[in-house]
Length: 373
Image (cartoon, rainbow, N blue to C red; front, top):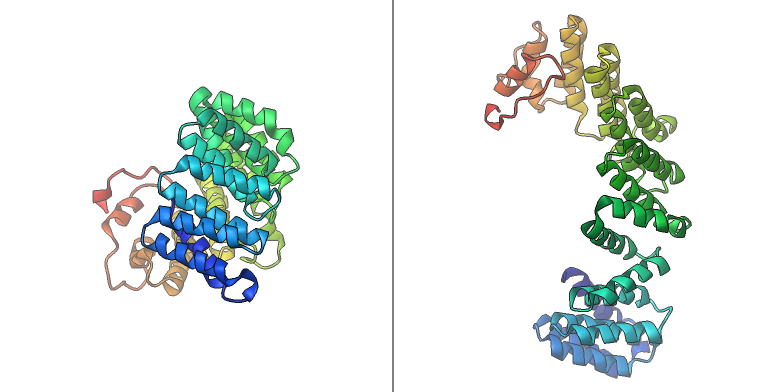
């Protein structure tokens, strides 16, 4: 049981109560007593104090909050059955209360963990279906799917999600359900089905509404790469990047996977399609359009390497001069002479592992030897 969320809940309850006399002195005193006992590690004493506070509350939401804290103290004291009873009492007395969603999930999880798993799993599934918009639903779904996978493997996960997909379609869990189904199909090697499911999840929840949209495009593109469909993979990565390209302001709509997607496009052109000119162009786009990423000096380095291998010495020198000017502390800034013979000598020698890297064609496999660095 994690301590920090509970500490925050108690702190908020304790501090906010001093702002207005609406709580009543008896209630405030009981809460303060419970908080002191909690910080001293006397959990049963704290539970009793919060129970007393609930009885003295003047408002239903304060009663529910005190009872919630009582249940959390009982959990910490190992009195899980008593805690479950309190959780269920809160849900019954305040079906639309601020704590009701949370306590339904907690009651189910406590039953799973402490001796009544069959009932707990049923109640957890029911809570997910009844409250898909809850902040607890996604973590609960992950836990439920882990159990389904443990019992029946990814085929069982696909079947469960397919059976429930329509139920979640109009809810906040829709993208998560489709994404998890795609992941199970992916692990089963059903790559075309996985790609289609990833794309369905991405396109049904475009930016900025989907929390998994860029992950969906990334994995759909990966499924295409693994089947040798490189042009299709590039098209999907470009579809991911389209919001950045159409914003009119490079970097104004950066998402976590955008720089990696641009780098992946360059790598596919370089390593699979053997289109070196396109790879150089795409590496330069990574440098030019993704201003906040730490990959910008890597992009220039790879662009310069390709230029040197293409015997385009002028371009290699121009790119390395830009790298040194804009990223003087980059590990690559010490390697200007390796890619541009006419460049000024750096103050430090190029790292040995980079010299060895340059002895191989760009994009060739790196040796698995950390000591070589």
